[in-house]
Length: 110
Length: 113
Image (cartoon, rainbow over all chains, first blue to last red; front, side, top):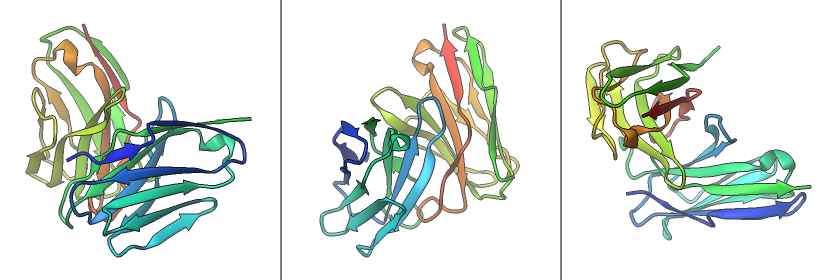
């Protein structure tokens, strides 16, 4: 079952922060985050495994709330290069295939 | 260089003319997948494979076939393409679906007239 992402789109000014949410109706095993620029392939950002860990690199981080069956991606002090569509992908057990959400379009303006 | 390659990158064809989109990876990955991407619908999985000769349907398998005779290759076959299969297609590979990075190919933009 496809996870639900919110918001569907967001527009920011450089330096502003954003949060993108990914929710599931089933218990999650792992959550993957990818960013896709227009016309290009999705690029890996990070993976979170069940256990409620938080990960991050640079100014992009993510959390995984196992009880709420939800993950959130945090983009702080956004840069123009952050523009693109963000996808979360979810699995429900160790051997499960990856199912992607519908995506969140992020536009960062100068 | 670790990569997933797809060919062709662009294809315009007509209804009913069989076509194959090739996908190859050089990372010795067990897992390979095909996705289609349509506006507003995200990435939807067509078929996936967990190893040679092991394939299974994803969310939208109708009208597609796949084969996995070699570990590195995972071609997508459209036996009788229809206009509703016009889409952007991505092949991806990984060591494991659940815990490892999916490496995506550059994409194939298919138009069926």
